[in-house]
Image (tube, rainbow, N blue to C red; front, side, top):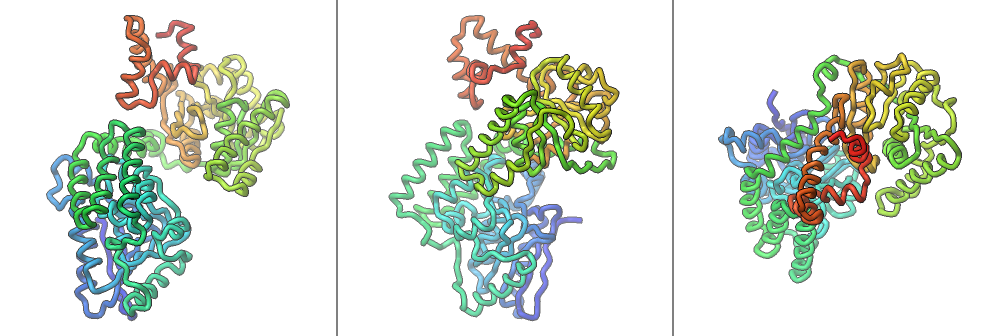
Amino acid sequence: MKGRTTIEVGADGVALITIINPPVNSLSVDVLTSFRESVEQALRRDDVKAVVVTGAKGKFSGGFDITGFSGLQAGKVDKPKPGQVSVEILTDAFEASGKPAVAAIDGLALGGGLEVAMACHARISTSTAQLGLPELQLGVIPGFGGTQRLPRLVGISKALEMMLTSKPIKGEEAHALGLVDAIVSPNELVSTARRWVLDIYERRRPWVISLYRTDKLDPLGDAREIFKFARAQARKQAPNYKHPLFCIDAVEEGIVSGPRAGLWKEAEFFEELVYSDTCKSLVHVFFAIRGTVKVPGVTDLGLVPRRVNKVAVLGGGLMGSGITTALILSNYPVILKEVNEKFLQSGIDRVRGNLLSRVKKGKMTQEKFEKTISLLKGVLDYESFRDVDLVIEAVIENTSLKQQIFADLEKYCPSHCVLASNTSTIDLNLIGERTKAQDRIIGAHFFSPAHVMPLLEIVRTKQTSPQVIVDLLDIGKKIKKTPVVVGNCTGFAVNRMFFPYTQAAMLLAEHGTDLYQIDRAITKFGMPMGPFRYLILYKNAYLFFLLERNTF
């Protein structure tokens, strides 16, 4: 069924417009067309005093339907471009009408979803709702008026921060900033929004048009300094991207020349960017990331991930402590095993340090820190492994050591327990050679620092059962990683791609090219650092392992 909106007019004279397009109520062309028709109907009807906009099944809207980008880029969609919708639907429909509108936000209001909400005269939200404008992740800028309304609701600096980082905020913070007007429980959301919009209609509450607010805007001189700083940061962090600069330009146009001029500048930029190679590539990446959890012959078998109540991690070094941190941050109780008290304490201290770093940066409260660290238990033997559901081995790259560990794990762990290794250099078939549980053995290759880097390579052997793969995919998603299932081969996926990249750099060096010149060329291209700086800083264990064995 195509996405749509519905309209219901209550006895109170409030028209409830509901966005329906599972799973996140995205704004497809069909939904936008239906939305416009519903709005026009509500404004036309004499029995309608005011409008409440909400989303079905606890989600306001996840924003513009990204699948529509492909049609636009291929020239297959003969419909109004998204960048024109801001002026055509939202500005004229709500802000120039004689009937007030209130957005009732639950779940998420992202991208175009938040822009719809900002075009309303007020916003009521739940405390856990996520609100944000993440369009820059896709190589475009907000196209439904977000570059103009957000600065007028939260201030220029915060608006630029939200757009340039693409990070959403929770309802509570949105309320503190002034982005939403009240926080209520999900059960009271729509009823509160109905009362609120009637209060606006009866002039008991102010009739606020966000596009023309000025109370949150900085003086022009201060604003120019903010834009100058933002441009410098954008050029430093993303030197090859033009869409962050376009976003800043659109905001500045609205501040200097007025919001209407800003809306048209936003539309102009959006339509240029949506056809750019950058946008096409980032949209591809967006869908590729989401496609990693679909594995033919595994995820299409109808298998349900088994519940994981307790995890064990072997090794408290850099990788083991990082993996442990990622797990307890997602509320998994973890047993951390080491060979002696000294190493165990060092591992626990590393985990504590990882968490305290978050506290220092304001990303975690002290109360949350105490609760999270309480999920960690250190041990020196396998006795506590008898009821674990997942073990991740993260010891040094030594084949015989890992073989002995997995033989021990088979003895102590329950028969359903997933036995995973964080190895980056050793054949998983060799690791499980001394066990009879090869169907439960799988690679869980994290990248350093494991609690920060988003990628997780899930390495399957020919014996690994589909159920075990499904279980680890589920764990990967729950600890906020991007899990990618790969084969049990030299280098897996990432290091296998890294080989020719690094080899080419070494060949250039052998032919007399300056190492610094090579690194500069790579960083100018857009990589965070060059291959030689990477080798020095991180001492890539796998690369040195291969170099020692002349594997190149």
